[in-house]
Length: 174
Figure 1 (cartoon, rainbow, N blue to C red):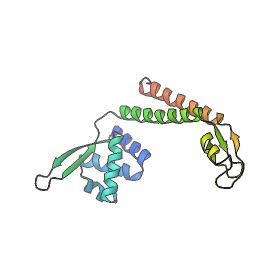
Figure 2 (cartoon, helix red, strand yellow; figure 1 turned 60 degrees about the horizontal axis):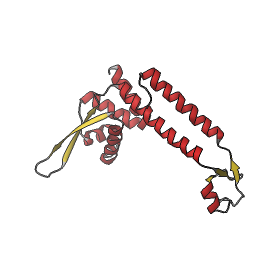
Figure 3 (cartoon, helix red, strand yellow; figure 1 turned 90 degrees about the vertical axis):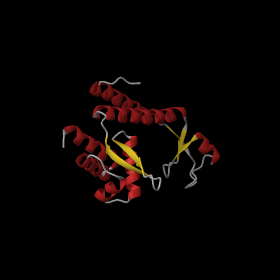
Figure 4 (spheres, rainbow, N blue to C red; figure 1 turned 90 degrees about the horizontal axis):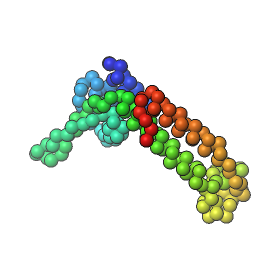
């Protein structure tokens, strides 16, 4: 296996688990495989193989071509590894993580939170008012929750990932 192919396999495995790594391994070895061949090789159901292949496709790790059976009208999909450069795939993945972290940061900075001192369930201000500022699980009175440490951690991680994306991959942040 070439270095890029090994990296692609590791990336798939890290994101989606061992079955994804085995799927990439099969596609590298065979060049192309159907859903059924992937399912048999990996040892999972055809539906699970299709779901996994779609996840891998959404992550730009695999591509497909489809052929229509003229008799029954169904499509057969032939899957193969992507021909996109690995650094582009990693950059795309980092961008998606940064985007999710920014959405979470927005949520944390735009909301006020309360917490149950007993069971530690966290509530937004709206949820706390609906429950009359008492925990819906143990009925303890809710206390104000300072999420500054969460905000700081999110900001630090976003900055770290943006630096990795920019320095390592040579891709500017959006």
